[in-house]
Length: 100
Image (cartoon, rainbow, N blue to C red; front, side, top):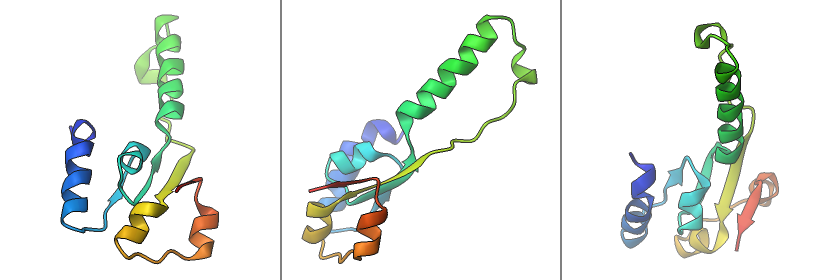
């Protein structure tokens, strides 16, 4: 539900100068300062693998439960500076992507 409202949420947070952290990189691409969460394309591929196994006859109850294996940290440096946030070089180095 929130994913479809990211544009409104990011705009609200920016207009009120609220530092916010999001669960999906799409919010950072819309102007949010930071996201840390699953890589949605990787998660979609894993879902497709499960679906393939089910369509080939596997019983869903017998498939193992899996957790996402890749989390990504994305930082929008321009937004962080606008909010007056100072980010350490170590954090910027650890980020999977820094949007400038």
